[in-house]
Length: 476
Image (cartoon, rainbow, N blue to C red; front, top):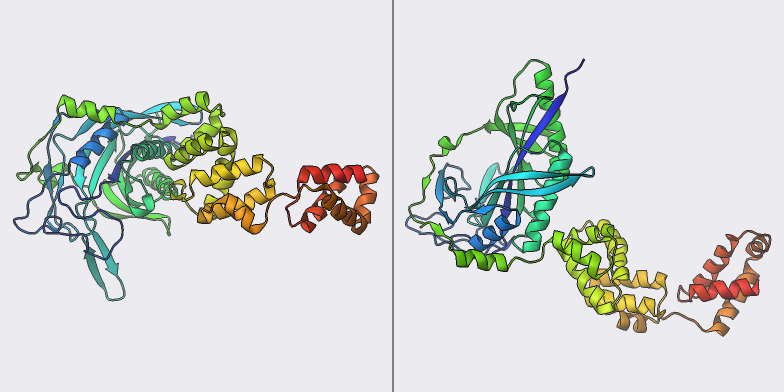
């Protein structure tokens, strides 16, 4: 009988915080910009430059720690993690090893109808490194220090996950919490959320963990899923062949769907950690902690309960809408402005999701205002425009955030409900499609659709469909 294997996974999640300036200096954290434009003597590691801690970094870290059920370390401090790499200008990174800001938390996930707690070992604050750009044409590597000193929190889970499905559920839960807090946009494609996967396999039922590897360079949930499956199979194959898994850091190449060894795994002692002599300990008193607690916004779990009670929408609708803070914000304001929460939910879940998929966009990229969508819903509900026109107008709202009332007037899109006009057009449709008329009178109900379609085409989509249907049946 073939051996059964269990996959054991823990994650290190790096999140860039949404501060306007870096963790230890006043340089901008804005994404992009000319190389090395957002730099100063502190974040480029010039001799004698001294760091000053950004208070907002600590508050964001506290907010995240509280939201993921951690204990906040009331007196935490920074340490130097020493290593040489070209994108690390000081030859050390300022991080937290001995007294991280938060410990012993958890988030709840749901997969396959089963709820599970994923424990969080710790979360610490640190500075990001710069970025190496490899120019293959000139065979050189260039360094951009714009990212050097951007504030990060690293959230280290316990090895509680057993599948890629659980990993994605954990990451989605974490991302949603952090986005609701406003602490980061968590865009994997821009590097503001980065994930390292620690994975090992063991025989099913075994107590001892197998040898783990760490995989880096994972910039999408799809890449993470593929990397987990590939590494799981690679390790099982090695064990089946009587070989051993080497503890190492591996780089994932998503185009080739394979990982490659980068270096043997270091231990903490390799980094010669010691307390940073230029930074004083961070002391969090009761007043500061209580103020951060009081400022915590309504999180997704709380919104789900309120939406069901306040807006009377199904749980499945509320779950889809609240999966993105941007979507939830648009829904709430639209529902209040138009007074029709169910229609607001439908427009977001159907047409908005369709257009996001078509344009390869995330909900956070939505640019239209709730006011525009609310006006559109009111125009459609009043019968001023029909459903077909409403969808066309919404595409313009989605792309350009137009005023739908003004657009409908300018383009002459109001629904035609004048019976005299409709009867003339319908008479022409009946005369031009004798076969459809014959089929309908012969009992084929579907044939009416061809006549409705011909009428709507003649009216350039602006007729009242219900009235067209009524007049057609009457005239036939």
